[in-house]
Length: 358
Image 1 (cartoon, one colour):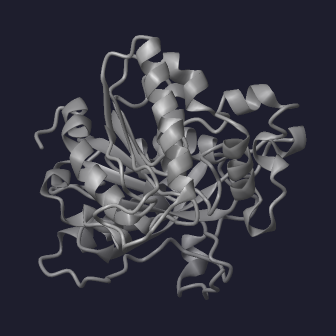
Image 2 (cartoon, rainbow, N blue to C red):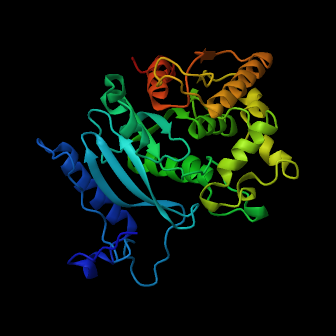
């Protein structure tokens, strides 16, 4: 973690209440956002920090339970990064990128914006969507608050089993409880929400919609892991991801046989009944070279996810899904040009669920 020295006046600000410090952050951010000429990489002053980057609390004060913003940075026009310390993540601080709507003012507690959660895939992070696509330039998204949270290199949008102990990391709790409440209380997020994601994030979008009924009004998955229990190949592939960066793969959902119920609880096909009344958009290529690929490209991962998405679509139809849209476009690999294209293709459905004109 980058080390910082405490700013002058730390002795005074150390005794400010948490609410007062949040108000100071909001006021500083508002000055940056509303300035007539804002530098592309201007930074809003973070709360008072210790050399380890942690906010200073008055002696004897307990740290708050849940999540709190400890730094705010404007990284580009309409792009704000929040550094959020989370109890669900063992007290660690992670980033959340906000793509803000025109007229957004976090100090205005009376206005809450339609909110679009956009989830990254495995091996990516909270910057992936803005770095790899044109999401920041889409005019129709100037009317909504886009939330792009960190989810770990291979967090899988889950509260990890950790051999029955639970605890850190609890990505699902961080996103659906801590971060949701934080954004709706202090950052202008409304309760009118939709969610989309790619690959691991596609699975996350489907899981969050199914596992938290009513939280999202529509969901879209681009090349998502839609049925990890499809067959041995699918199980082995996701276990390989779980083992990334030297991790014990059994920490995530446990053993696919011994902890079968946990696996089923994180498999969209097994949760299909909970998705049947929600608009769902599924898209995937077949793993062969498509129009947006270099010649000769292939992707066994995309081919596997293609089979999984077809299985989910079939199950949704079987249980009576009312609003299913699929785009199984044939040739295409597991690559960003397709996910950018599918983001655009799914926006009419997603924004329609938010009652926002596209």
